[in-house]
Image (cartoon, rainbow, N blue to C red):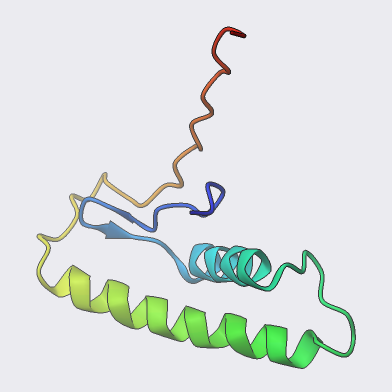
Length: 90
């Protein structure tokens, strides 16, 4: 699991398009092994990102149909990643 990919649903609030695109890009980076694709691979890399954005938006929209609407003061906010401190050396 990519620890840097953020959760895009907090209760009834759903992440915005920028957050979805960032998560999709991070996923494609992880799966492809490219942090930055070469010119030769850029088109397929960007195509994969767009497919994941589309699929993720569809998923979140469907999930949101069954959730209560968020309270007016409850907007989606990115969670901070939790880093676990290393344990004592054995």
